[in-house]
Image (cartoon, rainbow, N blue to C red; front, side, top):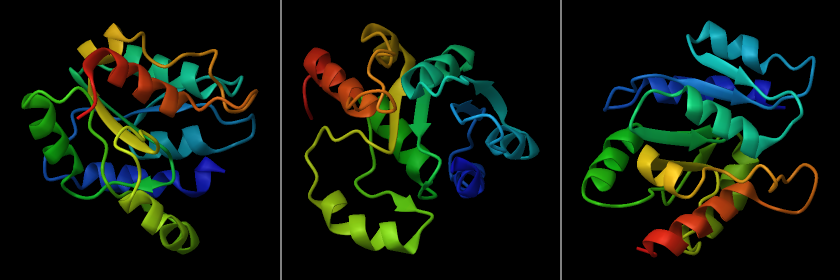
Length: 171
């Protein structure tokens, strides 16, 4: 399913006001999915986790990354053009984790359906897209590979945000 959307995310990463140093895609797609091939045509480095463990795939991507700031975004997100610039500013000012108040989805239905919940979501709702310093990511142990929404009802992104808030507090 990600192969339908990943191009929009990669295009938005390329069109940031603050240049993105590297793009690493953590691909947990099933066999036969073309997500990895599409990402390579955009010049992205692809790390694969064929078992479908999203948390493990994100950790593999973080391990491959060379930067001090890590950005995690779902395939169906389109980043606002100033996301990276604003995230870097907030992290340099001391934030432990940054997530946009709004995310744009590559689907008119989801944009309309999720607009109001995004505006009024709780402060540590860390779904869809975040930026985090590598130091913070490492301090909380990254994403918990035992928290996998594919095999049980555990949201790896919400779990990660709660653990960051537990160590660094809520903003």
